Structures are given as structure tokens and as C-alpha cells.
Image 1 (cartoon, rainbow, N blue to C red):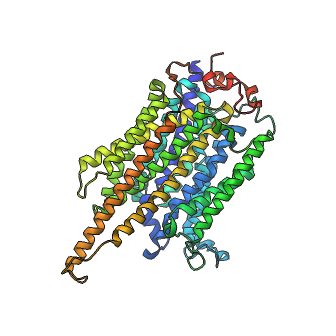
Image 2: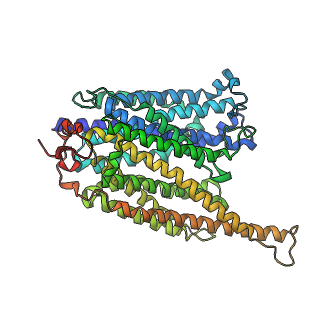
Image 3: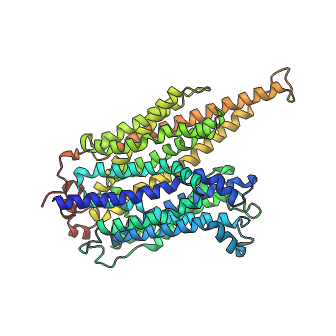
Length: 560
């Protein structure tokens, strides 16, 4: 037993290190953007092009996630982790070489297309970031599945909370890590250093994460993967991202989009295409399930109240979280006329507490259940947003700190209950799929929340500005007019951001309803099994989902 426990800890360490590295690269490039823009010769009038250095990674991250979670269920965690880390390393190498690739292959064959090739180095960098994310995006759900493989119900909350903490810590430390590398070397070093680190992590995974279980009934019955479904779902997410990133005429920055051949009205077609393809995807998954095949996402999972609740909470909390991540820095830059350092420090007050909350939430899941841990986190996050909407026109650092701390700790507390409920609600051979679904729904929530609330806030701001009237005796050419107008604009922006924070808080309160359906069993006293005794009865997987035997229920785990 001691040997198995030691092996489980080593495997957990290996996957946590891999999660941390891929999470670092989500934000590591942020502080390097000024140097990247200079080296790639992007003029000040085209700075929005650089947005896709970050957005490209997010898109790749989201698109690959559902596929690789399912692939890991079929082919084994170790093989999938090694392949994905290899893709991540290849993408890192291409990122570092992007300026040279732009000179060697200027992409002239794309002339006249919707891709702007005036900055070929940037095009290569965005493509490389997409490839890098295609490898990194699979690591988080597969790591969650590895943890669930090794640890029984009694300890899953704390280990999944640990993975959540590592993920958030990587994203939080990414800008600092990137700035240190850029300060001492240059921005390609950010990506070059990934290669030896990936090699070391792959060695750890090879040594401590076991290969696929040959008794897995999925792997012994054809290993079929719904590749077409993966392509359709990836296209849905891509169209949704392109169509909802700026809303109306203010969708995503037009990076790499040549405005001479494409207009923003095309974004509506992206939304319509996403809806049509989503309907096709749902029908395809239903058809495969009905005919006894292995779909990418088993829709019958959503018939389980606990799993559906975890998925819905993940969607809503993602929408609320992105509002805090985006609007806090912008609030400081616009309303308080602060600088980047000040806005970053304000956001750090929130992000620094998310990893702490994630670990604490994992511990609380085994004490007060996932349900009440999530409820506490959502109430705390809602309180944080309510305090944010009270931020005055002048800085009140005490109020700012308290509200950000409440929001960050609340968001962190919700991470472990969502993932723990999702993986406990399914059979062992569906862990990768379950963890992928809740993770990707959080990302979709971010896309939808940012688009919807930003568009709503922008409409309110424009309506408010349109009501501005010139006071009697003041001309538009006088200095007094500029002062009054600037003051009016600042107040209007302050009101809009306050309303947006309040709307995000309402989303947290709405998430309380599904949170009450999360796992309500105290798992602290349930014996924790290592991998050999924690596996489900393979015969249960030959039954339709929802009809598994008690042995395949997460609540039916028992010592053999």
C-alpha cells in the first residue's frame, strides 16, 4: 500500500509540473509583447494585430481540449500526455523561430486572402502559438483524469483542488516569469526554455504515470475515436470565438484580417455557422450513442443532475471570472487614469487568491461536501463583485483590496467542487471526457460572458455619452468644455463598469441554483483507494450510460 501511495504521489507531481508549465505559457507572453511588436516591425497603427499572439493560444487551447480528454480515455493517459507535450515543445520551437520563419517563408501564396501577410513573422508566431496550445490544452483535463485514476472519492477533492491551484498559479506567475526572461535574454528565450523543461517532464511522466490499462473495455474494442465530431466541435468553437469576441461592430481586434476583403459584418455569419454546426454536432453525438459507438461527448452524461450542475456552474463562473480579469485593469486605466503597473497590482489582488482558494476548496470538499463549498465560493465571489461595483471615482485601496480578495478566494473555492463532482459522477473510463467537458464549458463561458457583457456595457456607455449637453455659456472651443466633457466621460465609464461588475455578481448568484445539485456527500470518511483498488467494474461500461451497476457509480467505490 505504501508503494502504491508513493507511486500515486509521484504521478501527481509529474502531471502538476506539466500543468504548471502549460499554464505559464497562457500569459507568459503578455509582458514580452512590446519587444515582440518591435522585433516583428508592427507599427503603432496595427497594434491590435498583436492581440492574436494571446488569442491564438486561447483558441488552440479550447479547440483541442474535448478531443484529447476522450483520446486519453481510449489510449491511456501516459501516451496522450507525452504526445501532447511533444506538440507543445514543437510549438514552442516554432514560436522562438517565428521572426526567422517570416523572413525565410513570407507566405506570398496567401496574397489576396483574408490573412494579412504584411507581417509574416506575426502570422508564423500566431500559428505557432496555436500549435503550442494544441498540445498544452490537453494537459489539464488529462491531468485531472490521472489524479482521479489514482485517488479514490475520499481524496479526489484535495488532489483536484491541487491541480486547480497549480493551473491558476501558472497563469498568475506567467507575466512575471516572462518579464524575467525578457529582461535577462530576449523574448524567444521564453519559448526556447520550454524545450528542455518538456523533456524533463516527459521523463517524469514516462517513469511515474502507468501505461494504458489493457483491461479497459474501450481499448479492447476497436479504440474508435469520433474524429469527425472533433472537427465539427473544433469548428464550432472557432466560429463562436470569432463571432462573439467583439459583439456587433466591436468584435475581436481584426488581427490578421485584411479589412480590404473582410468586414466586421461577417462576424454575424460566424455566429450563425456556429449554431448550425452545433446542431449537427449534437445530432452526431446522439446518433453514435444510440448505435452503440463511442462518441466524443456522451450526451447521456447530462442526464445526471450532478454532472449537469457541475457543467452549468463551470459555464457561469467562467463568464463572471473573465469580467473581473478584463475589466479591473481597464477600470484603473480609464476611470483612475492609472498606469499598467497599478492596474496589474490591482488584478494581482484577485488572481493571487484564486490558487489559495482552489487548494482550500479541495480540502473543504471532503469536510463540508462539494455542494456547500461551491455555495460558499459563489457567495464570496458575488460579495466581491458587489463591493467592486461600489468602487468610488477616487481610489480607495482598502475597498479595492477587500473586494478583490473576496472575488479571488470565491473563484478559487469553486474550482475543486466542479471538477470533483464531474469526475465522481461518471465511470472511470469516462474521466477524461468528464474533466474536458467542465473545463471547456468554463472557457466557453469566458467567451460568451466577455462578448455579452462587454457589448451591453458599450451600448450603455454610448447611450450615456449621447446625453451630454454643453452647459450654457460654454463653447466647444473653450478649455472648460474639455474639462467638463472628460469629467462626464469618466463618470459614464465608472457607472458602466459598476453595472458590469454587478451583472457579473448576479451570474455568481444564478450559479447558486445548479450548485445546490452538486455532490452532497461528505467524502472525508470514504476510504481512499489507490489505482489498483479504485478501478470500476469494466463490465459496467458495456451497459448504456446511466444504467451502470453500483460498482461503476462514484458513490459505489468500495475496498475489494
